[in-house]
Length: 451
Image 1 (spheres, helix red, strand yellow):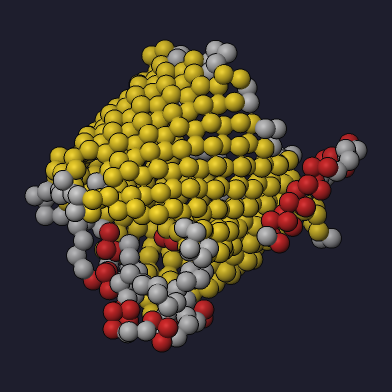
Image 2 (cartoon, helix red, strand yellow):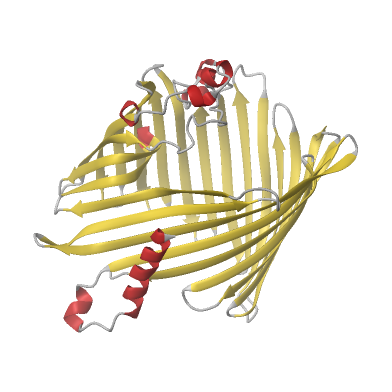
């Protein structure tokens, strides 16, 4: 709560400040402040032996807060410091006789100093893409870029650990200790210095023509190797309306490709878009080496696909997709294909309606799915949305062959920075005879940018 109060005070101070003079306006800060409060209410009743067993009520309340401030002046440089802070909190309340659980964490808390051809970031941050895939750590990132587009980034620090890691009652997937020990509390608390990561990327950028990079990432858990990857990424625009991108991720420890993908995007005319993709993935090489699951064989697969969108009329869009998967061994094949149509009316009510179908074939089962949705805005601050989903399985799951989901929501733009959304859903599936949920979301967004 203290965090949210501080963030709110900072944003309010910025929004209520007196108008700046012309010279001060040019030197003003850029900021973005956003708070989302989401409250949910749901009850699940499950069938057991033909009888419906009440599952009880749950009412979690989530808070998300984000604050970015850019172009802060320092004594040695003007408009050279950027800061970011994002966090979340959750108060989960069950039935009347249950005790509520309070939870929360900090996603990012960092400060970046920008120089003419370099930068340095300190604090909690996220590294995504390339050999790192996705990593969150407390440490430092530094980089330098030459005028011709050549650049180098390097990072290192301690991995952000889940706050519940190895606590009593928590079962770590793939950990033999949880199976062998009667009391998980007997496990020692994790030591941060034994959970670390480091890596870097060298890259070249040439206007909007090409971006290519070679990256390396190494991560340790409990002092042992978790992953050691190298990656090559490429994004190329050889001509207008054509884009080529690719990524090759290599597990150095296994000396094998963990992930390889490529795509070609074409936009030959203003009313046609076509994309072709390919991916080779080995799921077991994505897991940490410290997980016992990584030694088990999981099916690697290759996937080929094509997607297209046609806009024959200003108010109509047609889309279609088709993908084929070949699983390890070459005997099992999978596929998913479908399409849809979307209508947009920019009249006074601003109506959007869509209808879609998808067919999925997998090794164990498959299904047909249909989705229909409609959205209207009868008045500028009010919006109404409805969605319906139907799934039909090839093989029944728990003797049930279909699932149905219906969702309705109402949005109200209270003021320019404040929006309120109330929605509810009903579902019937093989896992719940009836599932009802309610959601209320309040969003506050304040931002100012001079870029």
